[in-house]
Structure formats: structure tokens, C-alpha cells
Image (cartoon, rainbow, N blue to C red):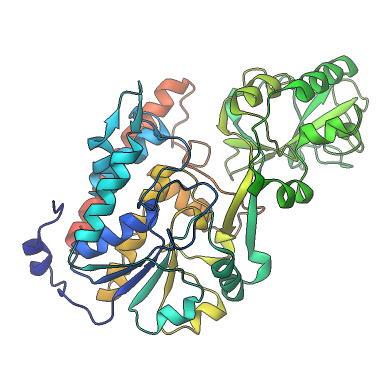
Length: 472
């Protein structure tokens, strides 16, 4: 079942045993991929999984790589961001992607899997591998497992145990850990109606020299009244018990604010104070501000619009906002229990922790999967694969090639490790953060096709660089 032959690995000079094992914490998608990739490169791996000793509120089994929510890994269309990611996984010989294809079930243009047979085979594959030692126990101290390791990968996921999360805080700093995901929606810039929007920062006049940092969507009173009525009546995600009290006390969804009073959003998130619509010369009745999510202004965040509405209702209701009638969502808003770190301040491009506390540990600590803020199943797999390549390079004392930003994971990696990224929230691959094309293509379909073709070329070059180093 090898993807890479042992003969090839031995020719490239990778030792069958390299001192202490690589410790992987967590046997989810990222951890399972990392463990298999490292073992296939003849490194000994010690894989910790706390289940079934300690269960979570959402896992149903004690199997590895369990898909706890949807069984879909999203679109397979080559010209989509999700499809581009799958092409990268295939080119890089991903184990978990290969077996996802093997266990695929009919789902139109998406890759969906039989979750039971999928996780069962991944579990059997890992447990039967001669170079992987599985320990069914909770890790509560990263420092403890570094003592007999050559490197450590933390891939404990969004439901990291309280004890391990507390220990992580001692390494990352309390201000760099989050325990809930309250992300506002992000919309693509080219789907907005700029005839209805204006650029201005609050209390600042727009001039040619300083046009302001925000897009503003102004409501009339009638538009605001209609929007609030639909917002309050919209269907919400049913919150589970583990994601209610601590989440909603910390960050109120926009629909909950509206329930407190019809005008409550107008005195908070949608306040028009300090803004003047240049078309009327007056202050609007209410205003939604949108902030650029990337340097090129390809996507915009709906400021303060954390929400617990279903994705379908977000699309319907938020398109009632002036200028967003045809909005295309790069990411819908989410609110749920989700432990993750402030990656831009903590990780380098190899996803290695670079804090002072981490530097004091005897071996490097890497973070993979949703704990690093890479949202999504396929993204977690790719993150685990990336860290496995980086650990392998570290153990061989060689430098890895930079993942090109033209690849969708390269764009996600750049976003997640850019120190200039502020208000960091978990993100999945999307065209809103990808490197812009040199020549602007107005037609969306043609532009996405160009992204895919450019990304494939970049991926082939990247894979060739990895082969030259003996990493692939």
C-alpha cells in the first residue's frame, strides 16, 4: 500500500531509523496524514490519540480520521479552489485523499465519502504500520513528550482537551489562544455593486489622497426595517450544548443583537455615526462596513457580522444589504466551539512554533490542521502533509522550497503565517486570498480557469523541487 517505495527513500538517504521518533498528537485528518507520510519516509512515529479514554462531544467512534460533521470534502471541479486543493493533494501523494477517493459515494460534483469505511481503513492502515506506535492516551504536557522525540507535531484539532489547551497556552501565551470560532462572512469584491457602496473611514472625509479604509453599504430606513425583520426570522444553526454559553457571552451574533431591539444594530454594528454618503451628502439611516481581507482588495469581511444563521439563510438575508444583492461568499459566518491559535503571530511557513517558550524546548514543535486555523477537511489533510514534509526536511537538515502563492494551499499558508494578518479567524482555501493574476480577467469563469491552470503549473514546479531534494 506504499505510495513511495522504500527503495526510492533509501536511495535518497533517509535512514530507516532516525534516533527518537517523531511524536504526533491527535489522529484526526491532519495527524493521520502526517503520521503516514513520515512513516512512509522510514521515520519512526509515536501517535497519541486520547479517544476512547477521553471522548469529545461530537466524535461517535474511536477511529482515526473520523469525519464528525459533513462527509463531504467539497467540490472536485478543477477550476474551483477546493478542486485545486485536491489536485495538489493528488500531486503530493496524499494518503488520506487517495483513500477518500477509494471510499467515495455519489455526491454530484463534490467528493463525499462513506465515513465509517473510510475512517476504519485509515485506522487499520496506521495501526498495522510497523513504524507507527499508537498510544491511546491523552497528552497533557508538550514538554514531556519532547524529551524522547526528534520533533513534535500537535494536530489535536478544534476540540483539543482542556488540559492540553492549557499547556499550549503556556507556550503560545494566553492572548494567542482562542476557544471559539466567531468568524464574520467574507464576500468576493467582484460580486459587489460598487454603484451602491462608498469608500470612507468613520469621521474622515474621502479625498483622492485618502479614500478611507472601509467600503460602506448604506441603508435607507425602509431597507433597514425589511432587513431586520428577515434577520430575526431567519433559520439558525441549532447550537449544541458544548458551544453555547462561553461562545455567545463572548461574541453576540448579529441576529441576537437585533432580537434585543429593532434599532439595536443601528446603535452598534450598523451605526452610521461619522459617515456621510457622498451621493446624498447626508448620514445614512444605517451602515454596514466592509473591510478588505487581503492586500489586493479581492475579498471583504462584513465587519461585526458574526452570525449563527444557516449558510443558506446567510446567502438569502445578507443579500438584502444594499450593494450585496449578488454577493458571492468566499466564507460564510460561523460560530462554534473551536480551539485554535493565532497562527500569524506564532508560526513560520513550516508551521513551526516560533515563540520564546517553544525555542526553549529540546526539539521543534509544529502545529497542523484546524488547531492552526486551516479550516476544512481537505485543508487539514494538506496541512498534515505539509508539516510532514517540513519535519522530514528538518531531520535531514535541508531547506524546503517555498510553497508558491499561486497554489491554493500556498495562498492559505501565506495568509495564516503573515504577521500582518489581523483579527485572525480560521480560513479555508478560496480565491479571495489567492495571488492575483498579472492580467485582470473580468469573466469569472475564465478567471477561475486561469487560477487553476496557473496553480497546476506552480504545483508541478513545486513537486519537482521536492523530488530533487528527495522529499517526494
